[in-house]
Amino acid sequence: MLDTVYVSIRHMNFWFGEYELCDKSCNVEISIYSDANKVNKLGFFEITTQISLAYLYNNELNHEEDYDYKKEIEEFLNDDSQIIYNYIYPRDDEDLIYQVAHFAPLNRNNHKPVYIDMWTKLSGEFDIHEIKNCVKILVKEFFSENVSNVQFLDIPTYDETKNAYDEIIGIFKD
Image 1 (cartoon, one colour):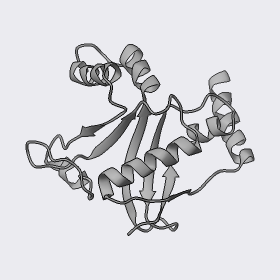
Image 2 (spheres, rainbow, N blue to C red):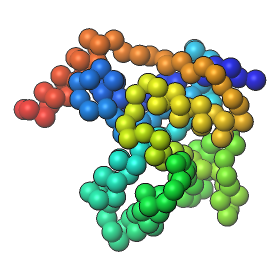
Image 3 (cartoon, rainbow, N blue to C red):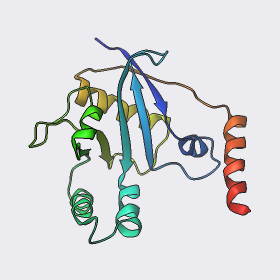
Image 4 (cartoon, rainbow, N blue to C red):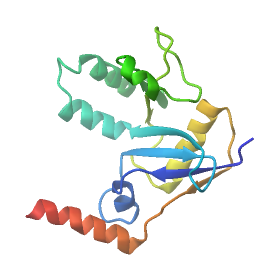
């Protein structure tokens, strides 16, 4: 039985928003562990807000090439669901080794997904509190555990975050 899980956030963009260097993130990728040493990885997930999905739908996706994906996004944006999961399943035999190890729905070929994206309307943007809430939901959904504690790993300091932010901004100014 898990009481605490540990979360590592993949990209610095979340921390840029958390430290108020820019707008808060509307999309994050996280790894969830059962231990602080990152030995036992439970899973990897993407979490995407409706704001991010609407932007993706309106600005990034091709109407013809991404028709099915756009249709899924449109259905979610227009229905009453607060959370749904978007699954990417193996496309060929080489992808089979990347199937998630934890519980997840099987496709018609009896394969588990290789990638899971939680689409949420619970918040328009993410802060630490919102990520913790989403992690608790993910752990309940995919690991059948009710965790009371979510701890973040590898939290950068303000100075580390500001330096990374300035470096990225500098690239775009040049």
